[in-house]
Image: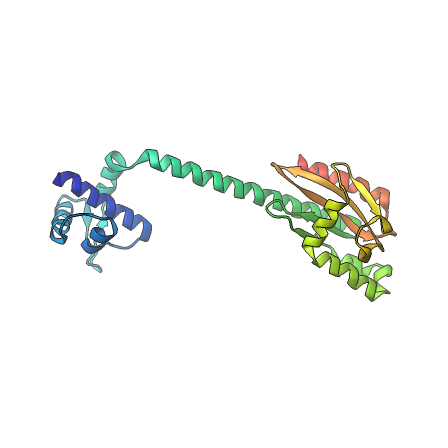
Amino acid sequence: MSEERRKRVLKAIIKHFVDTAEPVGSNTILVSYKFHVSPATIRNDMMTLEKDGYISQPHTSAGRIPTTKGYRLFVDEMADYKKARIEAKKALTVIREKHKVEKVRELLHESVTLLARATNSVSFATTPDNPRTFFLGMSNVLKQPEFSQNTARASEVIEVLEKHDNFVKTLQDLHTTKTVRCFIGEENILPQIKSCSIIVTEYEKNGFKGYIGVLGPQRMNYAYNIVLLEEIKKLLEQ
């Protein structure tokens, strides 16, 4: 029984040190790991473990840390690989999902950047992890004569774009599809952007769905912008 308890003490020391990188004393082992024995018993067990070379005492601390021999015994005989496998699979699932989201966000950012540069308009996309929108090329709108000469109209457009949730709802209400669609001027739902046109489509990447498109003045190169968005969507979804 004492041999089994000493292994449990060693296991507790290793767990504490792995978690904290701090040497551990007998009182911490006794309280934190719920040993139903006296403090003297734990101290004796730690003395035996140290004598046998499984733990050591750093010069700067009264606590103990595992030795190479202690880790070896843990790896070969004491580690709970069944529990570790469950935890590892759970962690990988979470990390993979986060990585998928991050990857899609990176691709979306690249796609929206290309759209903004090529169209000289505002380009937008909804993110895969929550129903929000990010925009690039806001300054492109302000440079257009329709807005640079009419600050009130420009302010209305900027205000709409800043209200992410409302803009997402607008996209949903437009009944967009996987085919690129164009909504010109008064065909838009929000009165504040009736001076603009929206070219938009739905994307699907790594199991995530959202919207990607272009917003600019009615005076835009429609055929060019529609085809450009079609090509960007192909790049995004490949």
